[in-house]
Length: 477
Image (cartoon, rainbow, N blue to C red; front, side, top):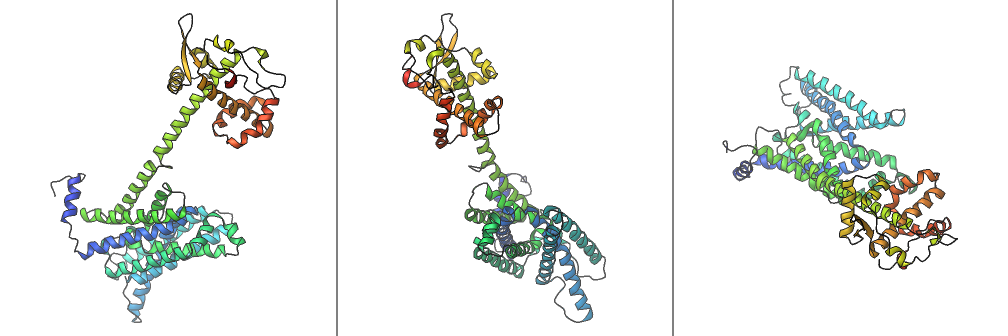
């Protein structure tokens, strides 16, 4: 395996086959990492939707002084002979981290509510102060006379390989409690994220629920300290929910999907760390989660970058086609005699013989309408021709011209009619003047709901803007 390149698939397949799955350390690390990913992702969904993506980062960094104080408290009690619970007892360190995290959450809430400082600035202030205090205490401990402080700095970046059965059991218990609380308070937390005013109207204590959510986030943070550390735990809170958000718009689907992505990222990172022993587990877990996020960002069917890019290109092609139809319709309509409309502006029958003599419009005439490039115009015309909406006509001089077909005339009539209805709407229902109408109508004409058309038809007819070239009166050219 040493001769196989690290980046090759053979390296990883061979490593998986050679793993000792009976090794308890491997199993504990895998289980702990999966539990961390699930619990952090479930709580991270609400932090993400509440716009508190930095809250997990702030609380994670704020947990460090609590770890140091808990360690110092255990050393003090043992030195005086009062008690000896072990300086690095996981329960003691997690309690210290939880208290420190809740104190930080309280400080953020107080600063944001009772000052002009916004919540994101309060999070940055608390993060800096608490983390600086934790580094100061950690440095003091490391230079102390006690010999049992070795490894305490692993809480900065995590050391999943040090997990044992009791640690995983502790993490599992806390993860189960957090998931149960999330299930029990699902409706209340949903209101907290989307409609607090409605929740208060129902008599729910929204401020108290906000505090409960913060405490639960603190719980998700502290169970990940030993695995990924205070620096990287915020990534496990935010990246899986952010990735899940690309795949769904429903909260009841987002939460289990985020838990699945978080658990998979944790297990994959731990497995990669086992295959490459010199690689740290915590960063690999975060990189695995980032890979899931990148895949979601690119390939999600509705919100992914590729799908959005495809829809944008399709919309641009639609706009170009409809603009070409409008321009060709306008040239055809201008060919009609001025007497082709009645005094009330309504469309009148046009003799078919008159339209049959129309030889079509040249590309130069169409380009002059909107100033588009020749390549863009030709592409739009070729698409319209393939759709059967326009046809090529040879003039007496032998030059190529373009003319609407009967089906294309119907399509162009609909497009122009929608556009002119928008003109009416923008002139009479907004503060825009006639000089600003045309450009804004171009920007919105493709999104007019059908039920709004009927309300504008009378006004368009009264202003003499109804298209005079009615498909029903034209027939075949």
